[in-house]
Length: 406
Image (cartoon, helix red, strand yellow):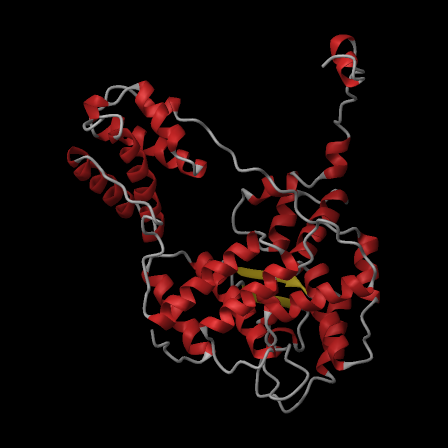
């Protein structure tokens, strides 16, 4: 099949427009934009003038060889597939049946449609509604295999068995909502939602670097060069002010010039962020601006050090941080080594200094009050006060630990 030929920016625009048409949220679209920037930056460095299926697959293989198949790899792979679909004109609905083929009993089809319409009218995005449809379609398909063709055929046993057949446990919560809807709006007398298993996603502790480690990373930067001055200013914005990498790369000269405060609209949330410009951060930015290439036509602060002086991307910031972690001989272990780890480190440091969660939330620019729960989980020092000393093993358990019981 003949591939279409688009420039990097044209292809990214087409992808984001398609994602909006699918009803994806602004946060999801921003994520796709970041991932596209990472892919395209790598391709440019390898000499590609435009995106190609071959180039995308090469990027994906390179990332897999270096980082293995982590969560970020899965996200990158999804974007590669979408870009390939555009080039080959094989686009399919992202929220389709995902390769599965469901058979919904005819008597339940209209109920499914009413449920989805109700959620759409309640303001849920099209992508969210499609995910709900996918979950209950799988559920009803499993019920039909047990000869449950109507609502009257449902039973506690059949509902539980159908749920256990669904291997994506994240969908159980959607099934629970659907079963409550049946009771409230479709006349079902038994509330089967109470027997749907509950599943909580494993919580991953945020990657945090100590104050000493961050100081070592900052000291490893050679600030006698243009690139060093630029990278130092960018990393301070992340480590001292907690800015997201997307907001750092999108900062304009007028955002900081002759200013004592930073007032921006966050790219991820669309919310305003008002922060005082820390003296050390302001000094680092001014130091970089004094040597920033004057031939650049961009109004963004951070640009590449060589012609044509294009603005840096989030990939540039990630690569710089990884480099300086290596220079500083800081062992990241299983911790992430991207700019977001600096945000988590700042939050951890502030909380350990007894700064209240609400202040931390505002500094980091979170719009939801629920973000406070996230910070509570990394409040290690305060949690340490309530740690319990486990009792010494005795009896049969003691014997088992010492190999005396098989």
